Amino acid sequence: MIKDNGDAAKLAKNTVAIANAGVANAKDGTIAGAIALRAMAKSGKFANRNNANDAVPAVTGAAK
Image 1 (cartoon, one colour):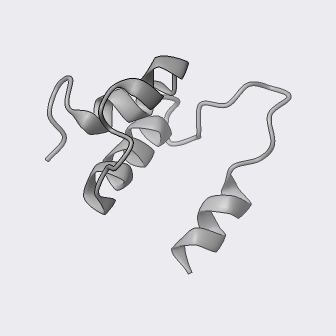
Image 2: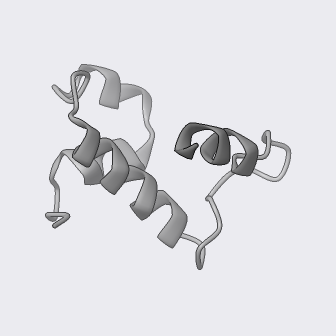
Image 3: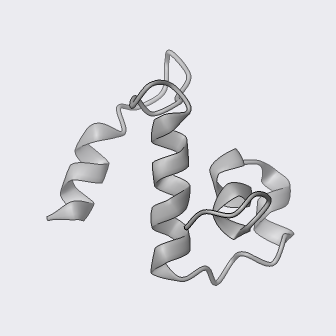
């Protein structure tokens, strides 16, 4: 379960301050929750900038 303002929510925001927010040693479930939140942020697509690298190959490779 992903909690409001939990570690997964903090990681999903992807800000510079997150590195110092006490979630640097996040567990696998926390990281998976953050990935899910990022994917849900834009109707199932990763919320990247238009000129950002495509995240799909990286996620697919990590899932195998």
